[in-house]
Each structure stands twice: as C-alpha cells, then as structure tokens.
Image 1 (cartoon, helix red, strand yellow):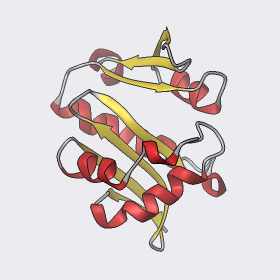
Image 2 (image 1 turned 180 degrees about the vertical axis):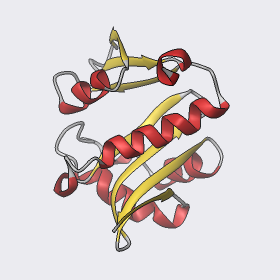
Image 3 (image 1 turned 90 degrees about the horizontal axis):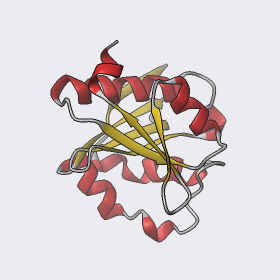
Length: 145
C-alpha cells in the first residue's frame, strides 16, 4: 500500500537512490547533490515528501523555500505512470501555496516527459536558461483555480 509522508534525514539514502535511478534529467555529476543538500532542504531551507510502499521509497518531492524553487520531483523508473509524481507534486504545491503566495519556479531539460508533465500541470514556460534547461513558473492564482 502506497503511503505519502514528509521526508526526514533518515530517508536520505533512499531519496538519493531514487534520484540517481532516473532515466531523464540524469545527474551527470553526483557530487552536485550531496547529503548536506538533502539535510539543508529537509531541515532548514525547505520541506520534502516521499511516496513509499513497504518502506521502499518510490518517489520524492523537495521544495526550496529560500528560492521558491522545486529542488526535486522524481519517481523511480520502475514506478512511473502510477500517479506518484502527480500526488507528490500536488501535495507539495498545495502545502506551499497554503502558506506562501510568491511565484514558484523550477527548471528541467527540454523535450522530456518532465517538460510535458509540468505543462499539463499548469506551469508556464518562461524560456530557456543559460544552461539549456527550461524555466517554468507557477503563481498562486493559477494554482488555486
């Protein structure tokens, strides 16, 4: 039975396992995402959620409250297309916009399933960033519709 809950620092090894398993938006340099990043986002800079089944993490979502940014939203490839990403996404945005009216942003690789997911979820494309990723924004008014 799938369970959605807040992520804690004890979950970091499983969160990172999922992050490193993805087939799109692959982290080419694992040193760019360290244990300290997870600790900071889960304890002081942000908040995180995970979806698990029998203590195995299937997906994660982490928001950066300092930069109003989605830091992570990933589902293990073996568990895609089961609604896990949607559940995590909606839970995270409901929580965020319940306490904050500032525009939220994220970036992702173009021409990926993630790009299609964000477009279908109501995010607005703001063009390409210098690193080649697409910039998306979601504002409070569009989310609460």
